[in-house]
Amino acid sequence: MPSSLTPEEVNAFIAEVFPSSHADGTRCVELGERMAVARWPYDETELRPGAYISGPRMFALADSALWFAAFTVLGLEPMAVTSELSIRFLRPAMNGDLLARAVLNSVGKRRLVGTVEIWVDGAPDRLVAAAQGSYARP
Amino acid sequence: MPSSLTPEEVNAFIAEVFPSSHADGTRCVELGERMAVARWPYDETELRPGAYISGPRMFALADSALWFAAFTVLGLEPMAVTSELSIRFLRPAMNGDLLARAVLNSVGKRRLVGTVEIWVDGAPDRLVAAAQGSYARP
Amino acid sequence: MPSSLTPEEVNAFIAEVFPSSHADGTRCVELGERMAVARWPYDETELRPGAYISGPRMFALADSALWFAAFTVLGLEPMAVTSELSIRFLRPAMNGDLLARAVLNSVGKRRLVGTVEIWVDGAPDRLVAAAQGSYARP
Amino acid sequence: MPSSLTPEEVNAFIAEVFPSSHADGTRCVELGERMAVARWPYDETELRPGAYISGPRMFALADSALWFAAFTVLGLEPMAVTSELSIRFLRPAMNGDLLARAVLNSVGKRRLVGTVEIWVDGAPDRLVAAAQGSYARP
Image 1 (cartoon, rainbow over the protein chains, first blue to last red):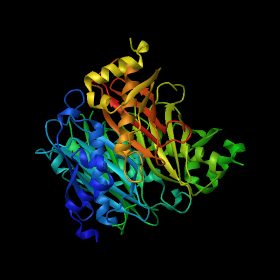
Image 2 (tube, rainbow over the protein chains, first blue to last red):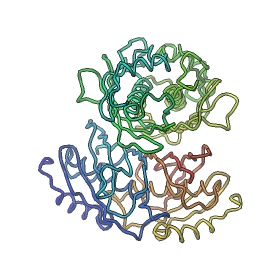
Image 3 (cartoon, one colour):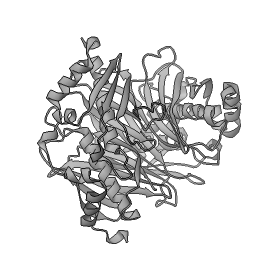
């Protein structure tokens, strides 16, 4: 039953079905009604120029957070796939873990739409990125 | 002072600086901290096939709501302009006034980013569109 | 047969099924293989502050151009609907008719995706907006 | 001079300033006037469920291709940063290297906007993703 889903169950599922995502340290750290929070542990070996956390890294975390939020409605569904996603980068992301909070705006028969906010741990009021996108139900 | 701005002041301002928007009935109906609600009165003369309210109409209302939300930070600033906006249409919008609620995710030196939800009056739990975009500060 | 569709047929169709769009002067002016060009005649009564053509007007034209491009694949299909569209505004659009050229990037079973460029008549090398979006097949 | 920039120079530059991107195999393979093609070599260790190449992998390649296209205008500029990017996933991407072709739609004083098409090697007519986004000039 989705409503009792725990972050630990999500993380065990991802470790099994998408091991490279689990291996980079991405974890589900919170689940609520139609929402999820994902964390990525800072890794200085993958910074882009300026010592910034890269845009693709933030996109990947936004995408994970939306997928985890979708699980709260669909259960652990491996074949829910991103249909489209747009992301805005707001300021440099530096020197800390990333957190992404996804909230579903809409749950339709064929599509889930959600909005994501991303910040560096310790500075939730200074967003580094905002995103919105759609997941297609399988 | 932006914090005391009222919907009436916004509507008087729009009537002056962007009269065609005021003339189509679009109004600011609520303002809060970094948020605004806009309303468009149903007009059956501009429906698209299927008797649906058109996508461009929803985009226009999303854009207005974001502009009004920006006013809560910038004051009545005519030259704040949309930089980019993405919109998702979620289900047919029919038979009623449209309401759009914009909330600012981020207020930066050069850019404001916000998220918008749109529904038909009476059905706030059944969103017809979701959008996210950026306004450039003048 | 879609390949022999003419702009005149598109315009007659729009006049019938979406009369408010036809009434604002929007016209299909060119059709090709998976592409279309739409024109909007300058109307100074609907300018936003700065005497700029408004963002929603450009969005509406981008949306029309994509629809017309979809007709080259689907025939005159009133119930093809926009699923999502993102638009970037690049510089002020002033003092002239708008032209929008849409090219389909992809034609799938359920979705058409296309890219649109918009300029003011006479300045095709100075784009005022670029957009990309999806139409759902009925 | 940007116009004489070669893919080899781009790849040497990326190896130096963004080593993790170079290390995953991403390469610039073609440069032209305001355009670039990037390639990512298939790596089955990072597939998502369904044996699909992941969405974040496609986003990363789109972002790289846009950056390389920006180099044709700006020279090898490490601090050009993505401002926003929207991506549409069109069909499963499987069993081959990815190629992404970015073309700049617009080169402004503060912003470059471009469009990207992505396909699996050998199937350029069956796009797996399309994207559009903005780079901020430093």
